[in-house]
Image 1: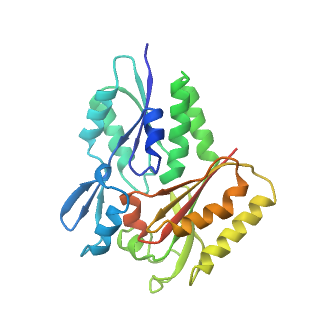
Image 2: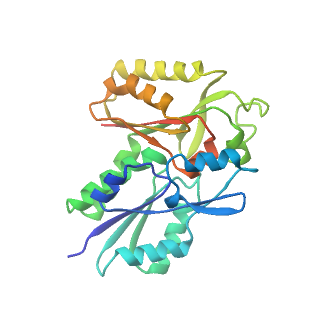
Image 3: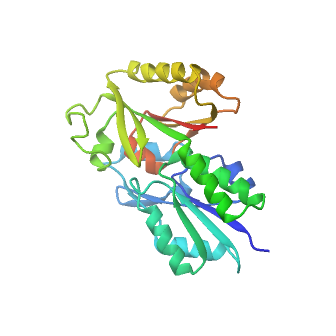
Length: 279
């Protein structure tokens, strides 16, 4: 009997036990720090940040090779199997295109999906797809669910310095802020693959102001929240404080996870993300 296999990439932030239980395959990206190449799959929690802080230059991230995708698809599929491969936004990485090319080389039935998000917003889509795959849903049913989850998700990110984003070319020096203000705190929302600034200021009160507003709007009603994820780069203290304040908005336990090396390269230290999926 043919099966549907779910594949994603290491820009996802997800608990290892969920990956194991739902039989999700993760293809790792890599990052080069001072000439040394590290696979995202081999870095332990906190290890990359320590490397980046000591690095002479901003680490360079790299999407998985096309051949690695081809090998992965070949390894996990048998005749008749279908693969749904869900990946981080093309605006952040060329991974989704590498996955498409890998599918062609592997000559397997591979459907590649651009999640338009990353981190735990990518997780939301992957987990729902994997649950349906295990339940025996069809490819069309799974793809419809992925689209539904995507349309009901939001990604907010707080950055303590714009330096890494500017150096990495992920935001322009004229993206509504003066390039000289690299040390301001900025809250952005990811909309249509792009990070859009929604609040900026000095000090953590900028983050507190955004959180107060988000909670007030959520409490006022409207869209019911199905789940919230919180990701962080650096120490978990601030993220855990956010979890405490947000917990009453959702019945499901809020996941607090360290984001991967690829995202940390772009955000720098002391960044956080609040990822929301609505019912």
